[in-house]
Image (cartoon, rainbow, N blue to C red; front, side, top):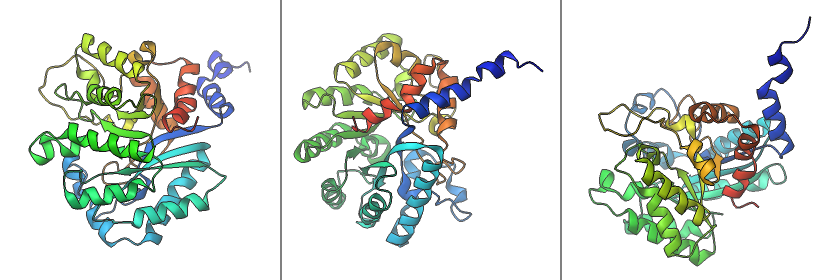
Length: 333
């Protein structure tokens, strides 16, 4: 029996082969400190809006031991190694609830998997930076983590009633420059044209002279903007050499609303970014937690979501997104 044309091509096999030849997958964005915490007690909370979910892991964080966190992190890293992941970047909550337990666990994980996978830890100011106590924990963690992490939306109208996102970013850049470390910042997560935080991040990068030292995580709301605005922001991202990290399955659940915007998928607009010269990398985001209970951290699933949602079928482009672009996003190269 002769092989079909598809069997002779087998695009998935060829793409996976190219990813392997480039050293393996790079998971540029996840949260391994709270992976695998979904259970029947918190199952009823999975439908809550994002800004409400930010506080749901508090019960787990307040009671958990360092050893248990290490167990959760180990499960993720072993899962990633089985897939051939060469490097991973993970946010870890650093706040008054979990205190320094995540930092201690991260230290153990780095030693345990040294030589097997490259790990970059990024701190997550999940409680925001406007509270004095939370700011203290953020600053304490800054000397430990590899990359300074941010969540400006936590200090926005949706959570605290006033917009202090720019102030949040000022603290991030000041802290990053103080410690000589790069930045990863969550921006434009809500698929809402009212959000223009990717541009704000690019402008702050220029203001602080931090070109080539910043990665933007998500940038989904950018796709909801008019074309001329999108193109303007793409130019700013290229000028400041900012990598954008897409986590497609994490945001495919964007909620239906009556806001008018250009027709688009709730995914980082890769199809426009790549031609515009913007570097795009790939991440899984949450794994088996209150945010994404069904996510299993599968990198192929993420890449498949991304390529289908954006009609991106060029194997060289996709292989770079899955590998070399991720290394640049994590400042490994």
